[in-house]
Length: 112
Image 1 (cartoon, rainbow, N blue to C red):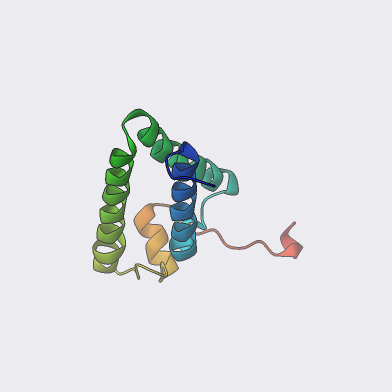
Image 2: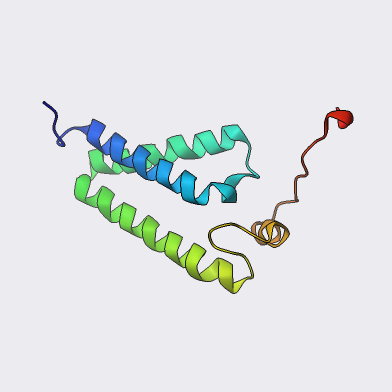
């Protein structure tokens, strides 16, 4: 019926991990343009699947582990140490200061 020995399985795992990451940590990328977020997602999936294709599925899972450790270090240690909640990116002004972007205020309809 279906098997896990195809590259489509690797694509499914990568997109599932990406979707989970966007659900949990999506607030951290709100300052990015939609095209930049799209390009980042496509590149991430391409790197994971490319690793599976050229180095083997085991190495793609090692890459998942490295990314997971980096997420734990950044969101569980570095951000709280610098005064930002690792799950909600609050306070937003402090988070924007840490990542080096100017705060983007929503545009009102009167400003257009």
